[in-house]
Amino acid sequence: MLEKVYSIGSGFCLLLMILPLALPYSPGGVDLFDLLLSVNFYFPMMLGAAGIVLGWLGVKGNVRFYLVLLNSLIFTFYILVTWVAVFGFQEP
Image (cartoon, rainbow, N blue to C red):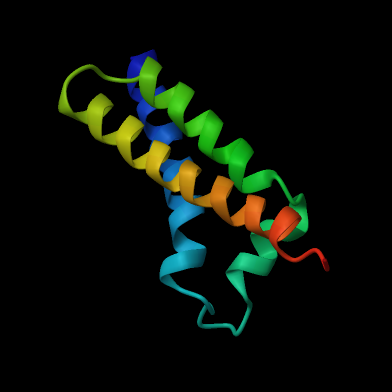
């Protein structure tokens, strides 16, 4: 039973990280990416790490594989975006 809760938590973390990329603006006109970053600049990476850990503890089989894989890919994307934001926009 607890493994299902971990898998649902991992899926929720994945959904929170994918939605700002899939829907730049919500139907209400709110920028979802700004909303995600307004919590904390590193919040998407914390969600990614939590999603990977929860996916690893979740239901075994294909569900675990896909949750960990997708969370890892999105986590890597946000790491790259953060790296570019921190180091790429500095003036020479």
